[in-house]
Amino acid sequence: QVQLVESGGGLVQAGGSLRLACAVSGVTDKLYHMGWFRQSSGKEREFVASVDWSGTYTYYGDSVKGRFAISRINAKNSVALQMNSLKPEDTAVYYCAVLSGYDNMKTLSAFDYWGQGTQVTVSS
Image (spheres, rainbow, N blue to C red):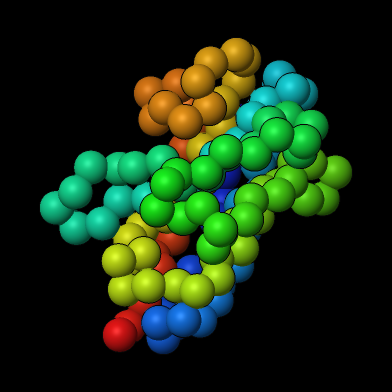
């Protein structure tokens, strides 16, 4: 059974930082990619960042480029999202996801497994 467990969400003031983490277990494909998406109230879930199985290649949504950094950790079965210079518009539920196989690493529908999400709230 595949499990993704997110941690690190919370409340932070604008300009502050948070670090999210996601631990993955049960994925049989060892060469899986990982990503973060977010969904704010009344909006569709949107791409935030992704990283390939090796940790070498990273991709970012336009709204977070230069502020967020994604990385594989712990023998690459976990992923972290370092969020700096946070803005109120970054407020959302953040979801970790796994893409097993080859597909567009920025596309929501390409990801096969999802975590339950962790709330990030940025106050102005």
